[in-house]
Length: 214
Image (cartoon, rainbow, N blue to C red; front, top):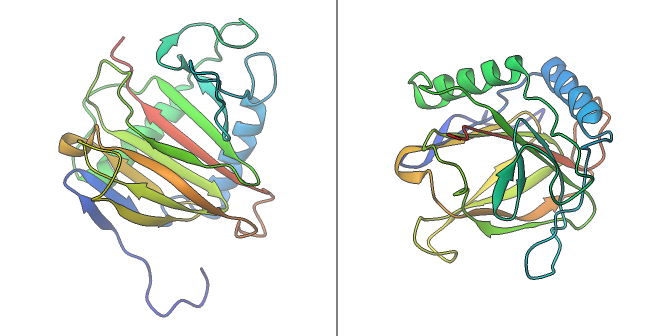
């Protein structure tokens, strides 16, 4: 945010969990947004995720590489239009590996092959959960576009405290791996109307990159 007294700096939120503010510059954010808009188009486009208990997630989602649905992966949109999942682009994997290097100071040892892209509109939220459906312990890479959110990063044992609330703004990077790879995390709040004016996005996009191990 322009005019801040102190620039935001890299912060280690927990062992293996790092927040790197303003990692994506304005041009890269616009490029990533345009890619997300293309990925969101049908077939295999943006959808509402339904849970086995009959509930629905308020954030809508599109997947690349492997299609995630509660709680498994498939090569087709098994809980939607049944079409093949969109391919995972090589350049996005390169971005993921660079993110790990910049945040954790160590090269990624596996190739990223999954992107889960969540769109938060209006009152959308994300409950506390773990990213545990992969067969790999490679770090998770999270990129934010649009509205600022409260990102709640917890512990590996319970959905409740202790946790740390982190403000994620457009362009921010969050990486978690190692002892924090299976930590519970969620988004209890999105601050509407806080996206950069020049980005052209109403709402929040979160691009999460993972290694499937499949």
